[in-house]
Length: 70
Image (cartoon, rainbow, N blue to C red):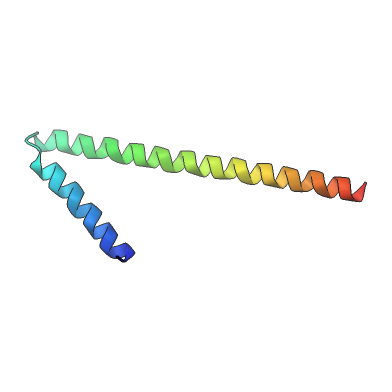
Protein backbone atom coordinates (compact mmCIF):
# COMPACT_ATOMS: atom_id res chain seq x y z
CA UNK A 1 0.00 0.00 0.00
CA UNK A 2 1.43 3.39 -0.96
CA UNK A 3 1.74 6.31 1.44
CA UNK A 4 -1.13 8.10 -0.31
CA UNK A 5 -3.35 5.05 0.03
CA UNK A 6 -2.51 4.74 3.73
CA UNK A 7 -3.28 8.44 4.25
CA UNK A 8 -6.62 8.15 2.47
CA UNK A 9 -7.49 5.04 4.47
CA UNK A 10 -6.69 6.77 7.75
CA UNK A 11 -8.71 9.85 6.76
CA UNK A 12 -11.67 7.70 5.79
CA UNK A 13 -11.48 5.78 9.07
CA UNK A 14 -11.34 9.01 11.09
CA UNK A 15 -14.26 10.52 9.17
CA UNK A 16 -16.29 7.33 9.57
CA UNK A 17 -15.66 7.26 13.32
CA UNK A 18 -16.54 10.93 13.74
CA UNK A 19 -19.64 10.67 11.57
CA UNK A 20 -20.80 7.54 13.42
CA UNK A 21 -20.87 9.46 16.69
CA UNK A 22 -24.20 10.89 17.76
CA UNK A 23 -22.54 13.89 19.41
CA UNK A 24 -23.26 17.42 18.18
CA UNK A 25 -20.95 18.81 15.51
CA UNK A 26 -19.41 21.29 17.95
CA UNK A 27 -18.38 18.43 20.23
CA UNK A 28 -16.99 16.47 17.29
CA UNK A 29 -14.96 19.54 16.34
CA UNK A 30 -13.54 19.80 19.87
CA UNK A 31 -12.66 16.11 19.87
CA UNK A 32 -10.77 16.51 16.59
CA UNK A 33 -8.98 19.65 17.85
CA UNK A 34 -7.92 17.83 21.02
CA UNK A 35 -6.68 14.86 19.01
CA UNK A 36 -4.66 17.16 16.77
CA UNK A 37 -3.15 18.89 19.80
CA UNK A 38 -2.10 15.49 21.17
CA UNK A 39 -0.52 14.54 17.85
CA UNK A 40 1.32 17.86 17.70
CA UNK A 41 2.53 17.45 21.28
CA UNK A 42 3.80 13.95 20.49
CA UNK A 43 5.61 15.26 17.41
CA UNK A 44 7.22 18.05 19.48
CA UNK A 45 8.30 15.57 22.15
CA UNK A 46 9.85 13.38 19.45
CA UNK A 47 11.72 16.36 17.97
CA UNK A 48 13.05 17.23 21.43
CA UNK A 49 14.09 13.63 22.04
CA UNK A 50 15.93 13.50 18.73
CA UNK A 51 17.62 16.84 19.43
CA UNK A 52 18.75 15.58 22.84
CA UNK A 53 20.14 12.42 21.26
CA UNK A 54 21.97 14.47 18.63
CA UNK A 55 23.45 16.66 21.35
CA UNK A 56 24.58 13.56 23.26
CA UNK A 57 26.23 12.12 20.18
CA UNK A 58 27.97 15.44 19.44
CA UNK A 59 29.23 15.68 23.02
CA UNK A 60 30.49 12.09 22.89
CA UNK A 61 32.25 12.74 19.58
CA UNK A 62 33.86 15.89 20.97
CA UNK A 63 35.06 13.99 24.01
CA UNK A 64 36.48 11.23 21.86
CA UNK A 65 38.24 13.74 19.60
CA UNK A 66 39.63 15.50 22.66
CA UNK A 67 40.95 12.20 23.99
CA UNK A 68 42.47 11.37 20.60
CA UNK A 69 44.21 14.75 20.42
CA UNK A 70 45.44 14.60 24.02
